[in-house]
Image (cartoon, rainbow, N blue to C red; front, side, top):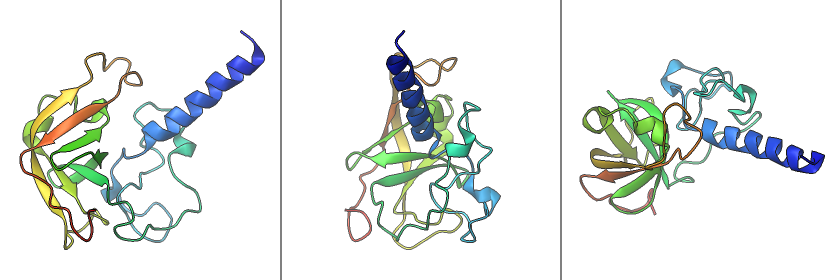
Amino acid sequence: MPPQESLSKILLLIILGFCLGQGHGNPMEGNQGNGTGSRCGAEPLNRNPFGIFTLLSRIVGGKEAARGSHAWMASLRKQGRHFCGATIVSEVWVLTAAHCVADSSTKFFSTVVVGCHDVSQREEGEQAFRIKSIIIHPEFDRRKPINYDIALIELEKEIIFGNILV
């Protein structure tokens, strides 16, 4: 394999690892040293499902996002605790990683919260939804979670878009 092709593949793996590392972990575990407390999307450095790229799992020197600036984001929660991120696709669909919802109990014990900014407290404008159905990519395999790691979640009710969610 030519050196350029090898380097391209390594770079692609690093970028993919960084992207897949976002939204995992448990921000309820406390401040990670940025002085702002836990926020939606902030993950502890030691919580990477693949055990790689842990130093790339956060934005170093970043700052807290303005409320509503990432209005397409959703929080997947079990017993009120954030465990994965998702992206709003439409009024009733969100997109997430398949490894987040591969457990058959996810549909029954999880909720999808939109309009959140700080996952450690309930906020005005938040909407919580029960899950109606989950569609996992047919080629997803838990033993190789980096491949086809994508799933759609259908919500039981429609998201109401407004000032926070546009």
